[in-house]
Image (cartoon, rainbow, N blue to C red; front, side):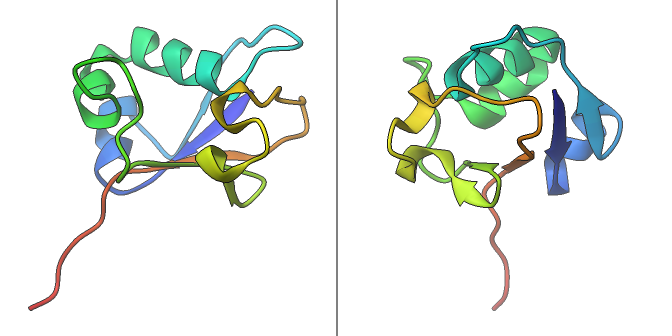
Amino acid sequence: MQVNFYATLRPIVGGKTVEFPLSEGSTVGQLVELVVTTYPALRQELLDESGKLYGHVHVFVNGRDAPLLYNALDTVLRPEDVVSIFPAVGGGS
């Protein structure tokens, strides 16, 4: 499964898009766990102390924020899904 990374996450993974070996029937939550296992530096960027996705981190599946999907992080991914991970974004004055 291809995952797109944005902003401050790109230098950690070494590019915009990374391919992850994901078994059929895997969920968004399992993908997130695979991402932080593959790139341990992402754990502190994406997950809180209890291993839950930070509220300010957005994992989009086909343009929809995963926590807002019907099954949230338990949503089963399909091979054709487009997954994008965004860190918190701030700025301005």
